[in-house]
Image (cartoon, rainbow, N blue to C red; front, side, top):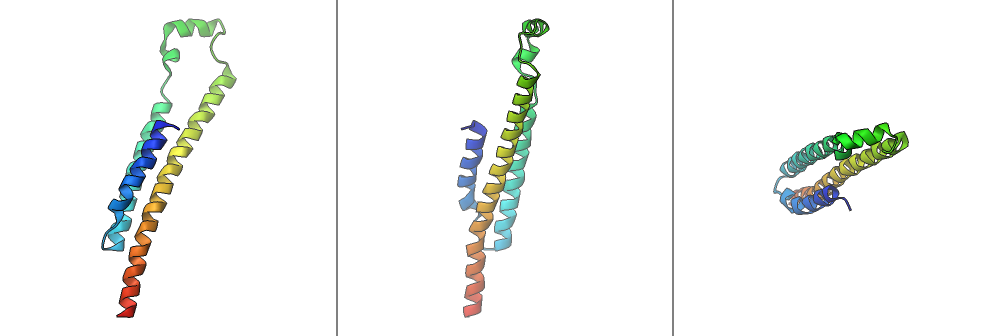
Length: 119
């Protein structure tokens, strides 16, 4: 499993109890804030994916490229697709964490409404 995806999942599990608050609106705003932070981290990791590889920076690799020894266009396309997949996984992890967080807010909101209706 990718380290960044594991980090996002673990962070979501740690952050979920922090989202419990007395007010549902506060709980949801905490969830929204954490999703924004997660999205920013995911965007930064995606930018790192776009940086040239060490082989692309290496002058010897550039010489080998002229000789046709580096990955072909299909190799670059495969790497681009893998980067898109990693980006999608990061975004999905942020969305899943947000959903778990907001779902954890729902019982608090239902419990408060139910208590008000009973009284």
